[in-house]
Length: 216
Ligand code: MG
Image (cartoon, rainbow, N blue to C red; front, side, top):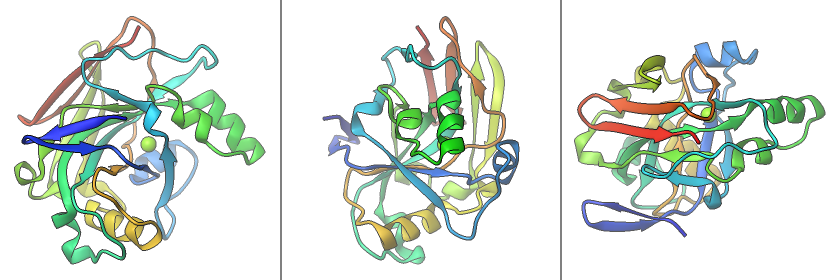
């Protein structure tokens, strides 16, 4: 069980929804395209890794990739949430890494098997500290960056999302009941690539977030 605290309020993390293919340039680099509806998968809560903990790469993959993403913490659950109300359901935002065993995922794609192992291993859902939603009133007008050993590898302008945060909340809640404590990883921009033991990773969003992680 992982509990996240935002402005003194504890949230026990529930379902971890992740959106694939939400930035056109990343979909292209993966040889896929954006569809009419979001592609959503789920990670287990055992995959969570909070800022301060080291990232340990799984022994059974030779190609674990970083996918830097804006992460939404749901503060108030709901079903069939309307786009216009959706942002009022957000408690906080963080940056995260949707770590992906790309070799295992490629094999799964080839054989039509689920992505669970490639996306759900221990430590595969990396999270920075959260900032209250009030600090980011317009999540579609922000940007964030990801660095390895001080070198920038990914840059996102959230206005480039195919499905913005409000649309994602509305769509996910039309198919699943959203609950307080659920997380939504909102997809990664282009520039994904491998991480290796010994590297230092960094996620930044302006003045709001600056998170560092050691890969061991
Ligand atoms: Mg992703």
